[in-house]
Image (cartoon, rainbow, N blue to C red; front, side):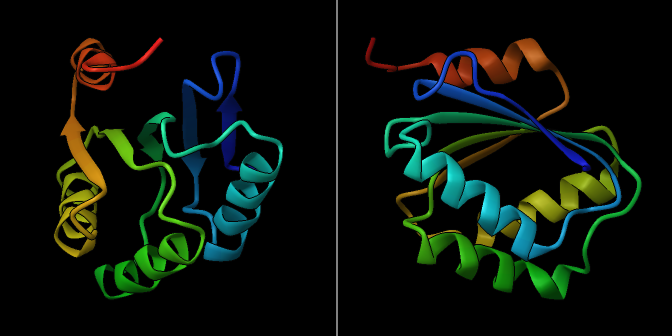
Length: 125
């Protein structure tokens, strides 16, 4: 599976690491459903998405469908930091930012410490 999860700090924070080929929307939806039903993904959960090791990304034209699928499940997680390592990955996440509704905060980082710092701001313990 190209997605690995670190849920050791859930529901406060979750880390998604995507490697290899970009996963289909159905797989992302299934993972989100499982995390929501187990209480590990809530409106307060902060998520770090590490996509630096993906081999391919979806077409920009499919990003609207990806955002729509997430919104059907409440858009969770609402605060997301994406770690990118290539311009094409950055472009994909910029497209997500442009299409995401205002209640979803998405930021792009190349440095993991900066991403973690941004996610940690204003977190309720």
